[in-house]
Length: 123
Image (tube, rainbow, N blue to C red; front, side, top):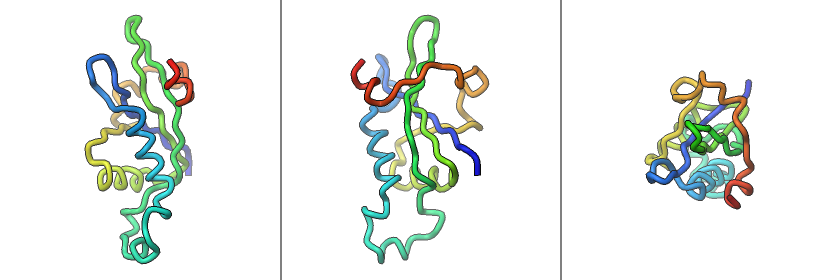
């Protein structure tokens, strides 16, 4: 499987987007689900309800006419439908995009500056 890209808008001055802490919580729960449920609970879960491969995160900076817009850039090596299913079950208020619906996917996002979460929180 290849690399999967996901994007979540970070909170801005207009209060649009999501707080970085809530995104980190989603990733932590996603990546360590096996420690959050008992063996019996995990055995009862349908395969589609288990998350995809572990997610990583960095912060993309989109310059919009001189104003920086920040996006959490998440990725993993597979299981995108599982990742979205996990999100919809456990984090239904979170809006995450992938390559099919990210509004800036064809705007050269691959060349935008990146920050670590640590550096983003320091700014």
